[in-house]
Length: 459
View 1 (cartoon, rainbow, N blue to C red):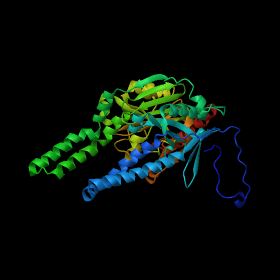
View 2 (tube, one colour):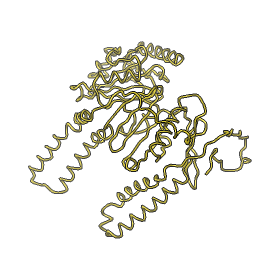
View 3 (cartoon, one colour):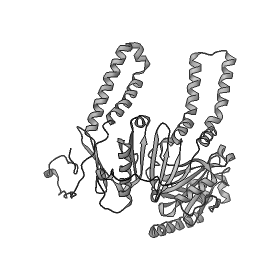
């Protein structure tokens, strides 16, 4: 397998217009293959899916011997396909692009411009931890999902490739050593530790969730029904246990995902590590952060706890499941810790001292309970919006990250002379000052536009 640009199908004469010649770099590093154990891990995952798909009813119908033969044949087929896929998959860096080549019958080459790179993760599922391997995932601007997941590489190769890609993404074009030279470099220092979340606080925080809080009530209700009816059938008990497991699934997943959460500062980057069964090592350049979100869940307020999240372009739409989005900045912590971490990401921003003004009195017709909670303000460097009655939320957007400003009026807002001002970012969420007086909304939109332009020019 040789390097170079991807081949195009069909003769050049078929094009009705001239095709410009693609310049070929003088030195193109050879394509690198994934780790030889990658087919084994992919085959093991396929085996689990096969067994789950066949189900116990198939075992009862065909018998254990036939069932085992079916599993073996399907697992062998999945392994063969994984080996073929591994043999035809390669990657290399060409200029400031990461190119991933894959496919047997239909060849495909993905070229990922590193200028669009937002963050790089080194993820280690349980099987990868047992075999000393890791998976590299890239998050890029505008990506609807994770780009170019390279599964699997050795931990050393994944770390070196992550550092190399981030260097290329954050600096001007320059000669970067090929992987053979880079692997001989000394290990990257861990950086400056910022904070480590105690696992005890993490457990307590998930006990203070609606799911865990209401679980004893639900169990007591079901037990009372069983006692009153005198029925303790297997189906009833199994259904109750299944329902309880479903309720607790989200808090348990969050504990497993955020276990041993640590945050480090390495120059102009944040390093985030977390996970028990699946470990993640995420590196986020600070200049790619679009916004910071602060959340105070209702049951956490008695302990003064909050949660911090990053908004990085490509994350908001990447994973519909909240637990899978790699945007955690602080899973649980007090206000002092939250302000310290926020100041690292957004220098000069103090969460408890941000200026906020409430919407006008007529907004009570649209938000009778939460009008006093709503707020918006312009700080020196950021636009801040507060919302939420039960779960208090604060969105902090640097002016330099604002991509567009919109003033939106609904039919009821028009009758009340109100409007909502949206400050959109590349991450997609941004911030919205809802139900502001119409004149104030237009003035706010004009000020946001001017400050965003000035911040981009100065930056």
